[in-house]
Each structure stands twice: as structure tokens, then as C-alpha cells.
Amino acid sequence: MQRERVQDQYPWTWEFPLVVICAVLLVGVTVCQLARSVANWFAGAGWWWPTFDKWVTSVPGVLAGDGAAGLPGVQPVATAEAVWGWLVVVGLLTVLAFTVAGVRGWQQWGPGRMRGMASISEAHQLLGKDRLWKVRHVVRPDLYPLNRRAQP
Image 1 (cartoon, rainbow, N blue to C red):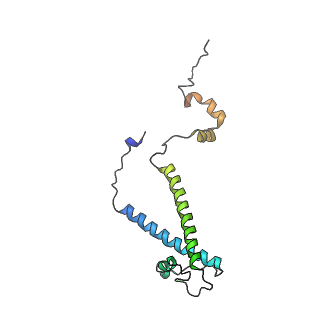
Image 2: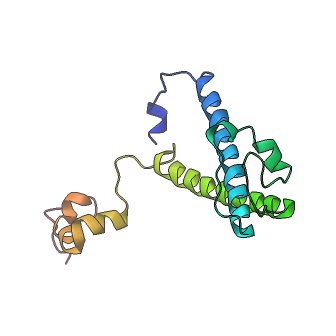
Image 3: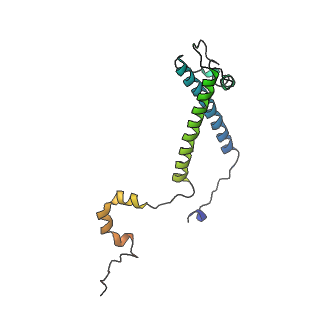
């Protein structure tokens, strides 16, 4: 209804795709490190997180199944199967969380949202049934005119 009247004055350029690519890479590295840390924790090594200088450079070793890549002195080390299993689990949970957040955000702020209109439940919650009944001629004057006469 209102989409036809809204014009986007800012053209899409390279900045937004670059931000998306960087965010995906950052989340991917974080998922790898988190999955490896959970795998080592379940293997009995405790919670280990790599130092900042090893945070990105240890990702190839983690993807190869090395639970000690970039971590000095981890004993016992999680097996490769455990690391890969936790990579799948943490990756799927991350995808699920981002999907739910994206759907909710699209419903809240996307192009199909209602602008300036309260839903029926929001109106009931805000005004209450008694107040809505008292102001029914203002809310819906087509159904409840102010000078309504009884039909004989």
C-alpha cells in the first residue's frame, strides 16, 4: 500500500556486500573456534580459547580435525571426529539462530510491514475492551455512526 510512495534515495554500492562478506567470515571463524573449544571441553581438556594472534591462523587446523591447533599444552585433545561433529552442531545452531533473527527482523522492519497501524491484539492490549467500546464511533465510524438511530 505505501511501498509505491517510498523512494530509496541512496543507491546500493559495494559497501553493503563487503560488510556481509566480512560478517560471514567473522562468524565462520568464531564458530570454528567455539566448536573446537566445546569439543576439547567435552574431551576433558577444559575450556581453551586461542590467543588473538592464533585466532584466524588456527582455523585450517581446526577444519582438518586438529583439536590442539593454535593452543599450547592442551591435554587430552579432542578427536578429529569430535571436532567435526561439534563443528556441524555449532554451525547448524548458528544458522538456525541467524535464520530466526532474520525472519523476525524481516517481519518487523521489512518492506511488507504495516506502517502506523496497530493489530487487533495490540489495540485490545493498549486500550482495553471497555475503552474500545466507548470510542467505537471514532475507531469505525462506518460501522458505528455517532447519531445512529434504531431501525423500526
